[in-house]
Image (cartoon, rainbow, N blue to C red; front, side, top):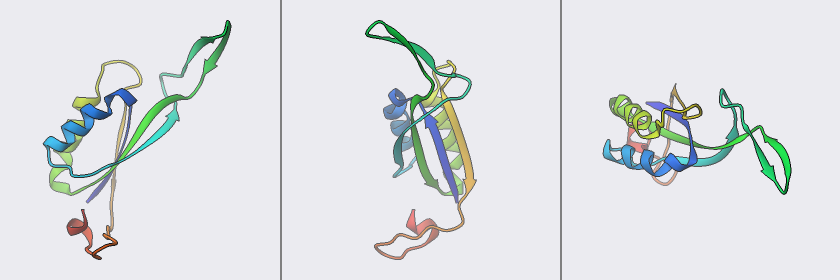
Amino acid sequence: MKWVTVIIKPFKLDDVREALAEVGVQGLTVTEVKGFGRQKGHTELYRGAEYVVDFLPKLKLEIALSDDILEQAVEAIVGAARTGKVGDGKVFVSDLEQVIRIRTSETDIDAL
């Protein structure tokens, strides 16, 4: 099993969700986050004053996946989230040792 953490631009959420549904992903968690990377923020004008926005709004998606759909899911995420511009995001894949569904006490793949 794998734990996939994805950082994307907020307006790409629906595209990514639909692409994941097509490959069989049944659930994910979304968190609004802020951050910067190579994009490094930007300057904005507010009421005549210029200021720097260092941290840009992003979304963090967290998904537990079985190994058999991992490659398809990552391809779906990358394809749906790509705009071709700086700041499109990242995909992080980690090993997931154990999953337990609280309601039924099912474990591992059965709990996904």
